[in-house]
Amino acid sequence: MKRSLLLIASAVLLTYFLRPFKFVRLDLAFLLYSLAIFNLSRDLRTASIGLFVALPHTLFGSESLVPLIVALGASMRAEKTAFRKRLSDFLKYYCVYALAVVFFVRTTNPVWKSLLLSFLPFLLMFLSQRDKYKWFFVEDAIFVPSLACLHIIGQYGRSWWILIVFALNFVVYRWLLDYKMKTRELSKFESNYKDFRKKLAKLVEMVDSTSQSSSIYESLNKLAEVISSLIGFKYVLISVLNRDLGVIQRVAQHGIGEEEFKRLKQNPPPIEYVLRFTQERFKVSNSYFIPEGALDLPAEYVATLLNGPMEDEPDAWRPNDMLIVPIRSPMNEMVGYISVDAPQSGKRPRVEDIQIMELVADQAYKLLERSQLYHDVVARVSYDPHTLLLTHSAFLGVLEAEIDKGNRFAVVILDVDDLSSINARFGHEAGDQLLEKISDILRNRTRKTDVAARFGGEEFALLLRNVTKSKAIEITDRLLGEVRRIEFNVRVSLSAGIAMFPEHGRTTQELIKVAIQALQIAKMSGKDRLMIL
Image (tube, rainbow, N blue to C red; front, side, top):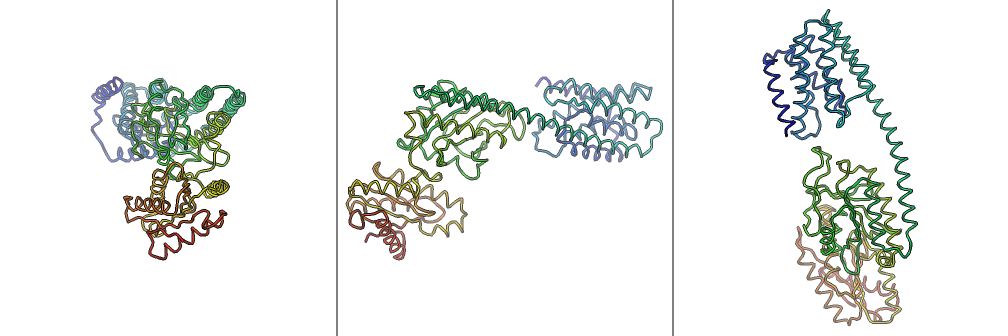
């Protein structure tokens, strides 16, 4: 705030000395020229850019308008920038070039005029902005004197060909800078890559050296600390999907206070909560980035660790941004996830950063699988990632195991009525949301002993243990009634077919065949009903 007030006061004082109030057509042409120069170089922040506008303008235009023309060009770059940042750029450029022109006006020697106008902005920008924007380039040291010499020549003969030379100089300068920056980026990438390999090797060594008797919590907290150091996030939270309890357990953290972590552990979200994050629209690589405002999340399930954006830029990390990196089993089943906050860079994650996090998540799975406490949680049968119900093959495996026990049970195959027309009318995203709502009912409105599965694209399956025929009908009919009450754009319904063990078959294939036959009859009879043969 103090710096802004100082810039404003300086701008007002310098405007008083310059009195830039006479604006002619030539100055308008130079304004367009300034906009072109700064927009062509909007990815660069070097001291010499403004000189390509200031020097020719002092030759052919009004000296008092030079700071305004340069400042407008710099602050009106065609990029997503906050108004406060644009205003800051305007004041900064205006004050620097106005100061240069004040010296320029008071100097009578044309050589000194050129040198002062050339070097003063360069030196001031270098001294005031070297930490944040790294204004200094070796190319500046070459081009600033050359521009000064060109300007001195122009003082003795104001020919329009000087403008053409300035334009050609800008093209060469822009090309040189671009080449130099790409070279530096490549060098930086190689350095970062070597550094990352060293850190990743340490991470793998740490995971592999973890003793079987070590506390899983100590190991995971250590892993969270390594993630913070390796990737550069201040806060790291590791969570596990406990499908037996139906909740998301917070198991380890780094950077989060003990009281806040205790609050998160005492308020575990329901397991279906993760479906909000794992939507296709949020997918980046194999992870999910949820920008601030994209979802309305319950306060008791999240920790807001930042009070404002870390930087006032479009790609700045926001307080409610979320990065969810799944922890997956070798069968590609999501068994947990790593969430992070407050990147040291202050920026939203790049794809490269997320892919590195995914490598770390693989190491997290090794720790969870190795532990006695979480082995059964992460190494169990596969679940459908969109509905968190058993997959088709996993359901058949459970069904075979139940047949081996010899107890009575029912198999129910359910089909969503007219889902294809719903997708065509409202879009596949709406259809996916409907399937998730039906999955929630099948998972939460059945008994703990029952098993629900995603059997096909629009089909579900249920295993109802220890039930009679009448009880199976009662449970299925109640579920169909729950589905009818779903709030959606159109009326929603299911059709269902039921097969009983052992009456309708003693093998998996026989039971599924009978249940599907009953389902087909229910469909042909008008839908939104159940049938049992």
